[in-house]
Length: 134
Ligand code: T46
Image (cartoon, rainbow, N blue to C red; front, top):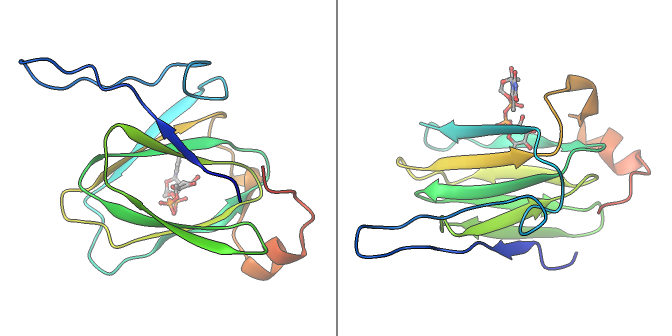
């Protein structure tokens, strides 16, 4: 698994902070959808699926959470706790999100519109699938 972190420019001044994600400069795909997870209940694990084609950037714009990425060979935990650092999640990557702080807002920038047929929600099926992690 390569380094999935993408640093985003923080354009703050004495009025406060501003951070940006732009196609080509930071997002390695055309952006088709943005969604965000918030008010996640304590002790909940979300995700528990992989995608066949979808590419995403996940940014904890507030608070923190953990993101475990599994490429079928190794499982690597990441902590998302910075609004100016994005975690790239490519296709063929099983993900599990946990340990959400009460104030966590996890923003996700996606390469495709929502498509349930792109999900693999069964771990055994994911392990058997030949989707190369990217
Ligand atoms: C992912 C992780 C990081 C929609 O109708 N449209 C959407 O764009 C999304 C993302 C979800 N939904 C519906 C599908 C479910 O009925 O919202 C409900 C909750 O979605 P889900 O259970 O898939 O949420 P998470 O937090 O487990 O996973 C989400 C994304 O679905 C997934 O692509 O990579 O966040």
